[in-house]
Image 1 (cartoon, one colour):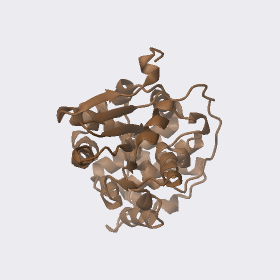
Image 2 (image 1 turned 120 degrees about the vertical axis):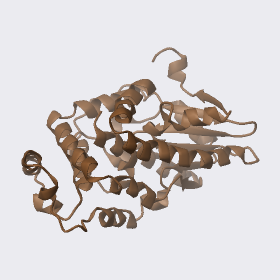
Image 3 (image 1 turned 180 degrees about the vertical axis):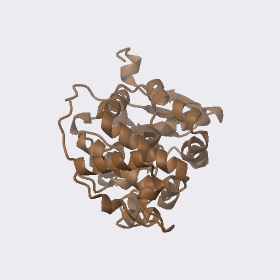
Image 4 (image 1 turned 120 degrees about the horizontal axis):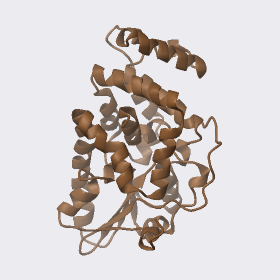
Length: 311
């Protein structure tokens, strides 16, 4: 599974608030997406966990009635980053500061000749001046390639599930918050070593050369609510091939989030919360869902389409 795609699922929502869709010739959907939605309960309140796809299309709306009902039931909404941070003008500045080179080297020095040639070809094809990358670390270049390719495929961060519910919470006057700070999220990328950063660029270029097939496959799995399929595509191989990186970007963050979600459950009163995070964080034995189940909470998948046997 592409290393850069798993990273993108975790952080792209925070990076792309001002991105522009370059094309939108995507297939039209006929049914609402089957939600990756779980309800975690204790004796007096609940937390709904909703797996997000950070970039979506107009055809991905409206959402399932299950998701609308969870939002209506929740008194507050939480995200990976708070809306204030995610939409702050300071966010791209923080990203750029982290991505700027300080080692005196050039990007070309970081890459082998074949990768440099492929990067030149990609930049020319997409009208991106290669000189614009010269001051940035390789991870930022790899992420930029991913951004351009996904937006060419008609996926728009403005339509991502995170942004959708940030807007809905604002309109409904519901309090919002984040599970982590922007600096913590940026450090996930900026903390990669040089080998990982080079791999990030290589695999981003390989994905670009393959076209839209892999992105469409993941998007289709998300629309089907295929938790097992997404887990295998997004995390299983990564855990085997890049265990240290997988630990840092997924397991460590999940472990940091679980106590904060438990506080929501353990507080007195019957206030419920909707938590919207990248789908990867909810899946598999390392996911937040199973970690909360292990603490003894009642956990159920909320999926009318699944219950009806239509998926």
